[in-house]
Structure formats: C-alpha cells, structure tokens
Image (cartoon, rainbow, N blue to C red; front, side, top):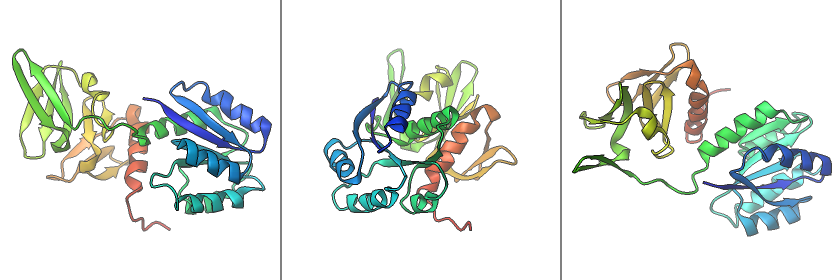
Length: 243
C-alpha cells in the first residue's frame, strides 16, 4: 500500500531535510511542495495527499486559515503534521486537529514514531471484511466484524467470536497479523484484538478490557507502541474530560 505527502515550507533547507528523512520510508511518495498557503491549497485539492507536513513559521496563521477553508472543498481531509522551532503554535495546531507536532531540529526517532502511526491511521484501501479459513476441502467464511480477539495455541490460532463461539485455524497467529483489517492490533505474543471491542486500557495492570463479559487480555511491553497507537485511534471518536 502506498501513501502520498505534501510539504508546505518556505525554508528550503528544512524542506530538503524532511525529504531526506522520508526517503527511508519507500511507501511514502512526495506529491508536491509549496512555499505558501495559496499554492499549498491548490496542490492539496489537485493531488489529494494522505499527509501534509506544514512548517509553522511566520506564515502559520495563513496555513491555519487554509485548513479551515479546505473543509469547504474536501470531504476527506488529509492528516496534518506541524513543524516548528517552538511550541508557539501548538495550541492552534491542536484546535485544527493536527495529527502530530514536531519541534526542530528534526529528530529521527520522533519521525519514525509518527510515520508508524500514520501508516496505522491511513486506510486508503479497505481490506476484505470476510476471512476465509481453508482446511483441505473445507471452506469456512468468517465475518471479521464478529471477531473479538485471536489467541495463539501452539501452531494453531483460536478465534473468539462475539456470539461466544470459538473457531480454530491450523495456522500461526503471525499468519493473520498482516492479513486482517486495520482495526485488529497485535498486543501480545499470544493475542490480536479487534479494537472495536475494547472498553478500557489499563497501563498499570498491563491489560485491555473487552466490552463483552468484561474480559481482560494482557498486553506486553514489546507491543506497547501498538497500544499507544490504538489509544490514539480510539481517542479520535472520544469525548475527553481531561483538563
């Protein structure tokens, strides 16, 4: 799966540095570069990039206005990543629902974390909602929306369904990890969870609670980044009471 991005940056040096860092991620292609909000908006409307990197400098307020204007023309708004030398524009970026905010100079680790989150967030092509389990001449079709979680069982995998039933497949958990829709996340060596069934994430106890029967499944430190990312995804449709 390929993704596209656009850069809005009047600083040529910063522009080249970002392109250099993004070269490491071959699935991301640069769709265009603009130095002001007018050319930026025109390029976004023309190319419909998945991600827009915006250098929030003295033109920051022009860019924020551009984003508000963009809602008049586009149903699917790209994800925005703000780049700045300070936190001066962080609050305005938050109000405009920026996906992330980077402080210059560029930090390779921060970029990598953001790119991994972007890859999880962007779903340009929906994967099939039906999973085929084949064993010899037996073909079984499963609605993935009914799967609560998957559990490894030696060299087999058990599917725990919404209706309380369990379906076994004679393949490893790793086989299904990259072939399920994006709402399935690996949280443990033994578990993949459908995030649509998660009602609670407890970092202190290291467990995710499912809506049905309040079942608790553990997550391990090695998959903590996946937990952090799914928390961000869930937060998009959450009314927060945090101050």
